[in-house]
Length: 194
Image (cartoon, rainbow, N blue to C red; front, top):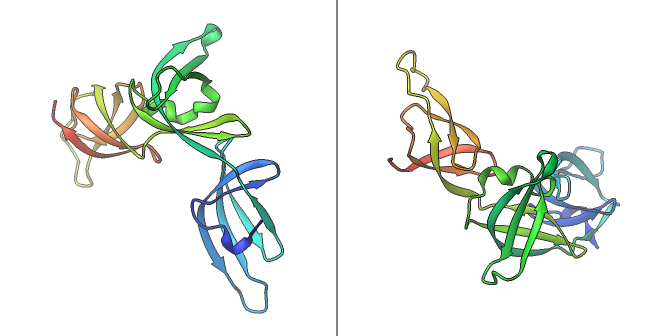
């Protein structure tokens, strides 16, 4: 069992029967009051992030989550407009498995064929896919950069090879390869000029 002051950033624990990850931790002690751990936690099944205050008398069970390195193979469209995403365990192409779009979630915007990812396995079931923090993706559609009032720096929206849309600086053109932060969905830098 974990106490409230052991819930550091990155720690995985069980709350209400579901696994959570600690994203932010702040220890707060006010005068004449008991200490509290102010947490920002992410539900690994639903992906929802919320604030939580852990008190001195709270105890938490550490989550037994297996993290497996996987490789994305392809996405397949199912009837009724749904998507299915196929992966295999890294180094073992025969161990294939498919996940529905609701499990893959926002990670689908950054997965291209052959890209590495991490699969989170809880109770013998894969509950989440996490791509690397930074991915290099090709710009497939980019409107021309328009000169004008750019004193604060102008941006435009481009489409990436995965279909995701990202705001980038005006100098990015179609065919460029750019680095994206997959956690925030933000542009980081241009890797290669197209």
